[in-house]
Picture (cartoon, rainbow, N blue to C red):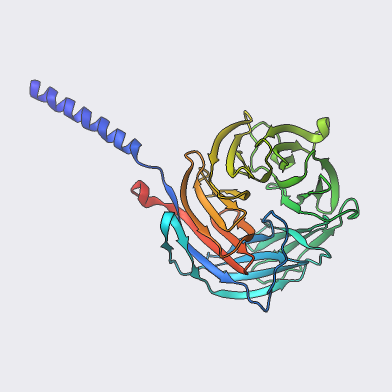
Length: 389
């Protein structure tokens, strides 16, 4: 009948509208659950060394059930550890989604004794070891001297295993920034970048495998978590050097192992590279923009312009949602936002310029270390209220 036909049309229209409303819901956002500010005791470290432009002298790790986190940071020739409480959940916001920190309790502070460097440490990196209570701590100084230690996070016994690797060229020449990264699949494989030497040294524990020679001064190095072109990701390296992103396979001998070069900003310099679990690669530098590359086509997938007021020296994809990225500027601000939509979610500022920037490997706990001696720690989660959960 006409009445039943009208009801059917109304029902169909309501169903279409409901489907449109479901698809029109905004995607989930990331929001900070807390932002803490911890002060390094002056008796432990009163005047940190200046370091280089790259904020690679800080590494952070969440302990046990998440009630605290440990920050490892380097100043001069020594590595220090600060354990910071994360139990209280308090947060306040200022203008333009700016987070305001609360003071955090410092549970303990100490010097890590197993890093006897003779020159200024340039990079500190943490990796998950075998078992829940084992961490691998890697440090490298300005001449390329590498020290790797296994830390027992439960018994605080760090004498489990350590090895030291002197620079391949015996440390000849002038000291400069040096960085390192562990392979995500084989933690015994380590890459050490040395800026002024224009070299990347690959080690299997203390055995030197190969040296790669860059065209420009390297400023950041990463093993991709995934590489979609059929190569074993444990042999692939992403390196920023001058205005270029270069991809290397240290099993290859053609072109010195370089398999791809992508030009960045004209006349600019790239300072940071990071990779996502799906294989995307992000770079940033003097142009104050984040560019996301798809390794399957080597074209710019997206470009977030103006996400930082100053040069970008630190980047990290979110572990919760890789459509978000953390951007650290050379000044005192860290921003989180959607890179595809160029949309800022939130940001927080230190009380002075950053000396270090770090994000935990498998969770969104982000930390920044200021030259004033403060360490800011943000605990970020997915805001399910935005999608109506």
